Length: 349
Image 1: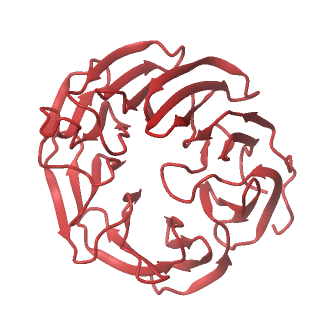
Image 2: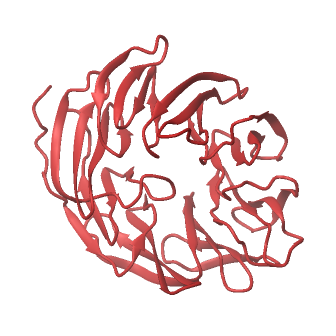
């Protein structure tokens, strides 16, 4: 169990880019990644690439968008939130060939991160306030994925980050005054928690749990683990810097600190690194800084090392929206200007 697995210890393929990368997506035998460049102060451009998941070779694109762009995938479609010039747009693309299927043009330009989330036939985006002050599109809007028709809108629901979290029919929002949960299909509010300590991070949905980060106090950063159904705070813990927690079963993983048993808070084994993703019963952790990084694979229950992978890029950001991704047997690691891929397959030793 403690021996490294028999797999390539360096990336199976790597693709270099001109500018920095957002989080990659993988589906339908393709890897989708947005490249963002700021050629001059106050100006930016985003390019969406589709790569072959086996070889990394280009399949289609790049598609160019003015301003910052963010992408989401669901059911054969890509949804791109483009900040744009004078007007922001939500664009639905056929993931197979990049064809535009529909476009919703907003009445102004989003001033904050403009990132859609998609699940079960709907795509949700938070807009506002725009550059025009009051805009008819302000608030949170949910669109039908196939037709682009507006399903519901809540003008009062303006996420501070502009990036909600979505999981199992619920949408979660971080606001200046707290966090709230809403029905994906109707927008109806399930719960809202007003907190005295400002919520600072995009919510992280992990099955029955929801994680929200509070404002840092000195060198300490505190997170709340909540019941996703009720919003009740179940646990509060500390992680250094801006690392992101996650959980599997009754184990809470705190990068840079430890794996911790949820019921009694017992720390099971030390856990280093900056970022992590869980695949079945293995946890992949990235370490490194600057350009060069390393990936280590651990048994998610015991913490025993399964593999040590070298030659990867250092992940280009600790916080959303730049993070590692997994899917279709691939581990994808976005560096500052390079995307590395490793075939991990079944993580069992």
